[in-house]
Amino acid sequence: MNRFEQFGLSPEILRGIHEMGFEEPSPIQDACIPAVLRGEDVIGQAQTGTGKTAAFGIPVLERVDPRQPVVQSIILAPTRELAIQVSDELRKIGRPKRVKTLPIYGGQSIGTQIKALKQGVHVVIGTPGRLLDHLRRGTLSTDHVEMVVLDEADEMLDMGFIDDIEAVFRHLPAQRQLLLFSATMPSPIRHLAQKYMRKPRYITVSRGEVTVPLIRQVYYRVLESTKVDALSRILDSEEVELGIIFCRTKKGVDELAEALQVRGYLAGGLHGDLAQPQRDRVMNAFRSGEIELLVATDVAARGIDVGSVSHVINYDIPQDVESYVHRIGRTGRAGKEGTAITLVTPREMKQLRTIEQETGVRLNPRELPSLEEVAARQQGTWMTQIEEVIREGSHSLFEEMAARLLEKFSPEKVVSAALSVAFSDRFAKFDSGYNFGETGAAPGMVRFFLNVGRNANLNPQELSKAISEHAGISPRQVGKINIYDRFSFVEVPEDVAPFVYEALRQSKINGSRINMEPARPRGKQESRA
Ligand code: ADP
Ligand code: MG
Image (cartoon, rainbow, N blue to C red; front, top):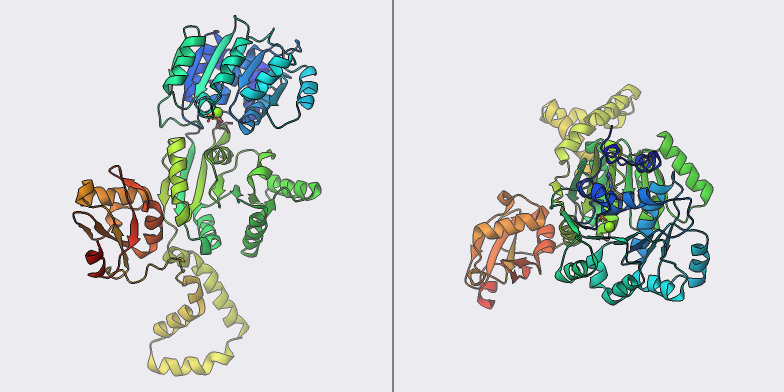
């Protein structure tokens, strides 16, 4: 018996949950579902991505009577996107029970919505303004509404919907169960709850308890110019069995799918511009395992139904947290382990930190496999190539040269030097696109100037801790630090310098806004500052 079964849900709803691939209730679901089923007013607080939708959605769907073609529940959501997202999730869970859901929002023709409402909808998910519009026109009846939900209440308040929400409440029957879900609980929300809820039960799930604990979330620092190469190294070292790779654009999907195919990966691209038969072909190949890597845009991936994949790779970092959670939710389903990998360029370091803050999940930095590791892995391939040349005897051109070199050096020296000439292009040092110039740092390091010093209570431990936290490097990698009254200097290794620079400039340390610039060789900057 899985833990969803312990809630005493009907078989249809359990089937819907099973089809979603939910193995276990998340903590917020565990706590909220029984209370809501008992009929209590509930305030649920948990960070983004913890499964709040199903926490209220499952009991709402459980209580709907599908034989009555009337609206039995109204859910308020802040935006069109969220209304659609919630409606989709409830439609899927409620499908075996034949529950009809409908999102309504501004921007869409009201006539269309009126027609849809007339067709017998059970659950309406709407933005406050548009809901109010229908209530005033009498095109949405609340006579049979038993459950009302405020979803993402903090966002609705931020967007200035408080008056609309209260106006919606005035249309509701006196006897109804009210649920409120939110990531944060600012005081206007508490007031709202006091005013409209009956002895609400306050349920909160603390940070750190994420919906999807089986997902390992990691990131790699990569450079824009060598992303494909970095991805190949990752694909080889992570042993990706079945993965979805997300790109920002359709063009990006085409280019990456092709680049991967050229490198011998079983990859296929999927995006909205492909004709349906083409899309079907790619999806069938992916389901049958003919393709192991599906390269897709967010939109294209949204519509597809695949079981759990072993890896989700954010080749391009997602633009918002919702999309991050959505993407990584494609792995680790049905109790399987999953890995979510995000590639982060220097300029995207800030975006990474925002995702971490909003999900409350810390992503672990991983180092790209070193050239030594790549070489070790390639050894077999290279040796086979050489053995083939020897068998075919196609090296006669070089025999005289070999003889002359062997007069001067040992065979080991000659062969390894020749190999390094032959394969050295794979070891090319990549240009980061950042040129910090001469900074007066130790060899292999870059020295940065910071516009704060002892005046901001800065000390070396704190500075190296801040750098290591912001840029995801070990504090041990931070080099020499000099702290003066009103400014400081710090050295970091060349390869991480662009990441440190982008992550720290215009950030805050000890509450002081800092600015960071490459240092100029000794003497010049000190006198300026
Ligand atoms: P929130 O509203 O708390 O930000 P969502 O309800 O949007 O979070 O859920 C985030 C993701 O987690 C969704 O993709 C959802 O389908 C998935 N999810 C929800 N509950 C579970 C569960 N019990 N097991 C696995 N995945 C879940
Ligand atoms: Mg939500």
